[in-house]
Length: 196
Image (cartoon, rainbow, N blue to C red; front, side, top):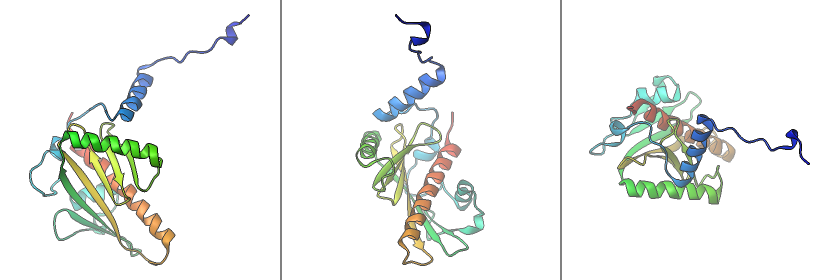
């Protein structure tokens, strides 16, 4: 005999729960719902990096632009902090084609399953915009993959000056900070270049 209280409660489907479940399902299959166009960011000829500047990096990292300098071309930037830390961010537009991008996304998802979510070999995140993959590779680059784009944007990050070079824990911490900053720059680029 069962009473009303013994009955299993059913989850109520709301538009939010359906959307969240769909988003997770799509992420696992490598397909994200496209909510915007990023033609301005991804569709470009040549090797220039006119999509990024000192001002853009400063805004993305919420830092004063006086801390950032440009390197010997318009794709290299340095973050020079008061405590002596120096991080270089280099940008690259990589022509890949949609099929190659889809394959890289699938590989990133499989690598997370094999190596764990926080692996320093390979990991991915879904962008703040919800429709683009941010894939970290070998703890030295973040790749921006959008399934509708023919090109990927790659942000390389390098720690060039480290106070107390012999401290491995400090180096690891600085590398992690550079990774997080690369994710911030990637999200900023997507948020500021999307058109609905």
